[in-house]
Image (cartoon, rainbow, N blue to C red; front, top):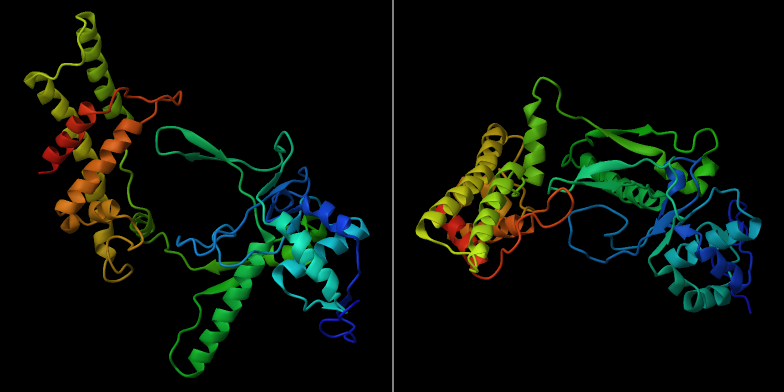
Length: 378
């Protein structure tokens, strides 16, 4: 028995079309949060469906870390068979509990979808094929250990739609505050990006592509003060705690040379006073290098503290980063935490082939490493 939800007579609303459950289940494999078509409509269809981690506590705006799911898009273009298109629109309406675009909604069918089909969409899903289309761009990102990670950025029309909705609500509140004299105008305007070219529907569901085409333009520091960009970046990101590859390689050569000598005599690694003095010098050089990065960043940020920036480091940064950017915070707790992190970074450092660079740092070796770092900090 059909139980209508919402209005029936509004001509702008789509009438609900009842479909077999199998039609919905089949379409689930084609629904993603991030589609390759948003990057290039000529790329092979594909995408990824991520599942939100509710209240993840991370300071990011993304489809992955949000309090609510985002609308799903096609892995292929929007020239879908009629049943597939209808299944997508109606399934997403049930999933988001948003029926504003429909009339005569079948409540019984919606309940069946909730129970038997929506669980399929609560699973992480990758639909990309054996090979990623060369039409989908790739970028190389430094992995922080001397290597690169190849990433394929994918857009999310559903996230764009949610972002604009939340931004519009915030702007409405801002306008209301302005009328009361307690707020300033927004410091950005909007621009249009022609996602999908002349036929936006080739990139996905048309209302989601419309959201992707809407972008915000913010004022940025001019070339008159180029250092401010670096200062803001350091304030939010901090500096690397991984010693340079040259210092790490020197330490590796020192330890491996000792091990080879002692192994010939059938002995484990021996730590004489002379050897430990040399090891301390190498570790102290790494400590000075990392602290030097922090001091350099501190000096770059300093002119903007109290004006552009409230403090040297963002409160969202870990304790180690806050102390690196602000030497006044380098107390005993910070030194212990820093020594632990630096020791871990040294022990986990990788060579270009991906293998561990410095082998055998465990047990007493790790204790010596941590002790050298603490001594260098004193």
